[in-house]
Length: 257
Image (cartoon, rainbow, N blue to C red):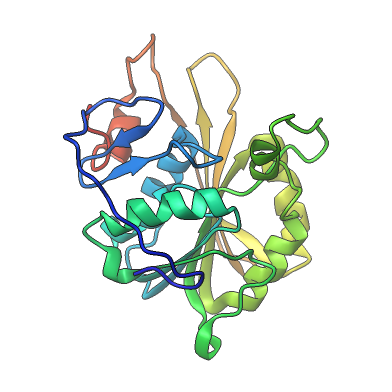
């Protein structure tokens, strides 16, 4: 189901292969076309979509859906009604094609809007919010304007994300996101001012001998009695030699597992 900024979308199934190309990525239950999206399929998003505890959510919001990947992963893992918002027009159109072709299109409403302008119908609140937000706060902008808007805090600062979370999250709801480790620390510090605290966190290491590069995080209102923390290595000893933990987490999605 495609929401605001209505447009007719068609999906042409041309016998897509099972490997990634520049234009698509095929998962076990859905395919993501990505030729026109500013932000392509990434390991970050796949990890977040597989890790976040969203199984019991009745209403879920995907902020900055891009290709629609996180919304589709959430639909596969839950029975939630999902709202996916995307301000970039090209990415919105791409997500629309992917969602329309999926088995869960009737449960996903896609809107061409920013989080700053999003106002849900009937004062709807969400049990879960999921996002792979912009980062690289202090770095130089990418000369590609679309990519710059996607990966830098140009169109959505952390404070705006936190303000939106406070406005849209239900009392017991949880915000799920992924950030580089340094940015994750900055985000957690800022979130405390919005009464949001880490409930669960997993640090991701590409290989055993390097520091963590990403943090998967779940935050909710109020200081939790206990923070669940863990660490996972993606490749355990060589190129494409994946850890058992990584395979277990992503096997419901990746064809290679």
